[in-house]
Structure formats: structure tokens, C-alpha cells
Image (cartoon, rainbow, N blue to C red):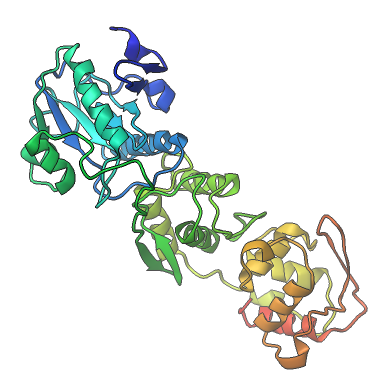
Amino acid sequence: MQLLVALTTVPVMLGLVIESASTVGIPTVIGSSGRPRSGRVVHYNGGPLTWGSHANCRAQVRQMHAYHRARGWAGIGYHLLICYHGTVLTGRGIYRVGAHAPGANTSHVGVQFMLGGSQRPSASQLAAFVALAAWLAGRGVRASVTGHRDWVSTSCPGDNLYRRVRSGDWGNGDSGDGPAPAPTFSYWTVAGVRVPTGNPWLLRGMRGTPVLRLQEALLKWRPSLLPKYGADGGFGPETEAAVKAMQRAMGISVDGVYGTESAAELRRALSSAKPPSKPQPDRLVVDGRLGELTAKAVQRALDVKADGVWGPVTVRAMQLRCGLRGRAVDGILGPQTTRAVQRWCGLTGRAVDGVWPSIRAVSTRGLVTFNGTVVSETTKALQRTVNNGRF
């Protein structure tokens, strides 16, 4: 029994499963060595957490570790955490000094229920907490249970959990393992877009409006991000890569999870961003002919590589600039995109017909071939819009 925590994922007793720090994906040694044995201190997250696959639970623990590191601590302050599925995830482990409650860090084991706000513990979490007590008792940890608010002025661990701390009732009570209540997301309005505050976190596998708002904010910061799917409301590999690119550029922990630290940096970047200056010497001749000079000017306005070749990256950026979203952001310059460009450039009525005579052909790979001899009203409108700094 003494070796169980050192393993990766192990059933311990009474159905309890404990995952090691290495399985979770955080360092196996955090802080100084210690032997907290006087009891347990119960915590929660404060803000609600998003639930999904167990991989999300591990990702959120990694995000907590990064957040605590940013506060100047050695790493995640809790000794153990219990996720919604009833698995115990190792933070610092029970042989280190904690950083979870002043006055209790060296004496008590800090246990966080991975929930927050008005979220209630699942039956699996409560059962795991009871089984964990027996496991800890076998390692000399006393049965005493206190709440974080017993040690310092705080709302933690929330009223629901604190009632259980006071009553000692860790049975099912009013909780269950049914669908988890949806967390409430909050936003800042910065530079004309709504930026999620990062609490709750957003991470791979999630879908919905909060993810869409994050994608729109990322594209506002750097239009070349999300080249394949754009702002489609799904947190997939492309959005995860975009979040990592932002984290790398901001000099913060790169984990692909959009939390409070990432949100603060994105907000700061959007708040301080200055509109790009429009180079006056490159004003276009409004002749209606679509060629390399017009293509490069459009690409500079879109903040993509100005090589004069229109391909999927340029077209996606143009689609986003002209207000298309979701599946319409496909990198293909077709009638729908042409109509969006026509409307964006001020054309109305029958002029918004989805026909662009200056485009000779679009390959299956999305490469656009120009017909430089054709004069087009759509091209004239585009040239005027670029010259006026409105594209």
C-alpha cells in the first residue's frame, strides 16, 4: 500500500482511484518535503469549472499548476484534487508542504473538489472523499475535516461543501451524477470584440458561444490564426494550436488551455494594439483590373503574407474580414464570398450578384487565377475600400 501513489493510475480501496502527478502531467516534486498529518482542509475552485472527458480534468489541474506558478508559488498548492468523475488527482502529494491555507500548509492535507460557483459535488466525488479518508488514515492522517474559510477569510469551499464540513454528511444528499449544470461565462468588451475572462476555462473538446467569442478575439489579435476552420465555435486542434501560439507570444505557460492568465494577456494585447498604419505610397489606381499590386495591397490590409498570390490563407482572412463565419470560412473564393466582398465594399442591389469577372478560375486547392484584362466594378469597389483604409 505504501507504493500505490507512485504508480500511474491505481485502484486503492473502496473503488478509489488515485492518479499520480506524472499521469496528470505536472512535476512529481513541488515545494519542500513535509508530512501534513493533522487532518484535511476542503477547498473548491471559486469560479465554476467545465466538465467533460477526464482528459479535461487533467488539463484543468495543469492549468491550476501554471496559475499557481504565476503567483510565485512552487506550483499547484493543493495536495490532492477530486474531479467530477470521482478520480483523485495528485497535486503536491501528501509528502510535501502545501500552499492552500495559511496556518495549515505544513499540518493539513489540502483537498480540492474540482467545482466552483453554485456547482454541486457529484455522488462520485463524495464517495471518493469518503474512501480517501480511509486511505489517508492508513498513512497517519487524522480524520479532522475543516474548510478553507476556517483558516482565513474566504468564501471557499462554498456554502454547499461547507455545510457538509460542519455536519460531517458526505453521503449522496442532494447530489447526483446526472448532467452537470452549465457554468456561467463572463466577458470583457475590448477592441470591439467580447473576450472571455478565462473563468471558467476553455479547452479542447468544448463547443459553443464562449469558444466562438475566444476565436473571434484571437482573430482580432492576429487575423492569420485559425486558417482552416476560422471562428466555428469548436475548440479543436486548430484552436488549441492558436491558444498555444498566443501563450508563446505572450511569454506565459504554453498548455493550450485558455484560463485567467491567458485571458488577461489577450485582453492586454487587444487593449494596447494600435491600428496598423496604411502606407500612403501604395495607393491603388482604381482601374477595376485585379492584378498583383491589388492583391498585395489587400493582403497587407488583412495582415497576411503579401506575396500577390491569393490562396486559402488570404481568402479565409478575407472571408472573416467581410463577416463570414463557421463553414462559410472555407478558403474558397466562390459566389458566397464574392457577395460578402461586394457588400463589404459598399455595393448594393443588383451589384451584389456573386459574380467577379476579374477572377478567371479557382483551383481545387483554393488558388485564385486573375484575369488582368477584365475591368470589374467589384474590383473597383475593392480598390477604393483598400485606399480608404476600410478593408
